[in-house]
Length: 372
Image (cartoon, rainbow, N blue to C red; front, side, top):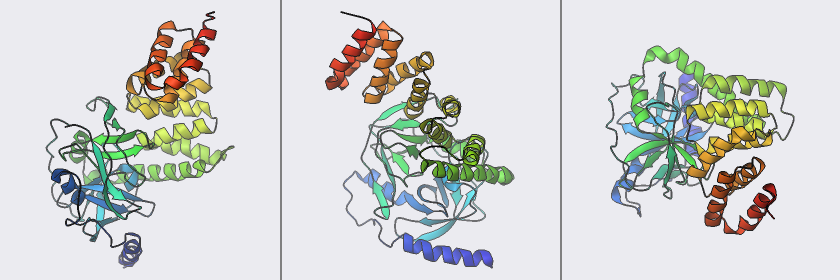
């Protein structure tokens, strides 16, 4: 009875938050029909902690992020037509930031999904937009990098396709409207997508026998996220217990996004030892993540570990040669280490991507190499 009363209260509150306004099939869509059709395959998800997105992959099955699900036992789902339903998490033991929700407490048998053979053109995010209280198609972008998904179960597709907070769990499609992945996270410039291939790995490893472990890890994720939020509002002298909880729960969550955030948080607060520990782990999980690589490069730079920083910067120069922060770090590392080949490479890239900065960069290099 208590559970039922809570659910009714949750429905009332959520109905107020999820306004009745929503995209409808009759509403004009400016993209090709295959992309427009994906609007109906995206849902809004309300948890006690956040509003996020989910993507329908079967009649009764929705996929979203593991960090959205945490250890919650049920969720409120808003469909594109405005209908609101209840959904339940399906336990699994696969270490990817994905989770399945079922509209049935006793779900139907899960079926392996056909994997796209080829990504056509640029990609874009389709997700629930908190500002509009409705599903939205965002501006397209290109794929920047990705790792070997068969070797790295937490690797992502990295893209400059646009998204906003609350889009986690949304669909990512190519120019033909083909679902190629699920949005996980991003920094506003480079966003991260979990590839479609890993959804099938989650399906394969979904079983009620994993329930206890699933919710245990979910609790780690929730405690980690709560402490990271506390730390976000701290400018210095992070509470010892908060730092200890981040160190413990974020590490044990084995969640790439949270491990990234922990490393960035410790770096911002000057705890470089912990920062490097988390960011080095993040790179082990996804070796070609530009956001993680840049965060680690900054931590190495501040702690003056320039020899460790150099290979990181060289990789970033390949992945994101237009990034002004990468170029600035590259100039400094090349000059201080007196690496002629690296300095030539960085100056060439600056002349292409940031001409205004070239005179100052050249001056720094000349002084470093004592060129008259």
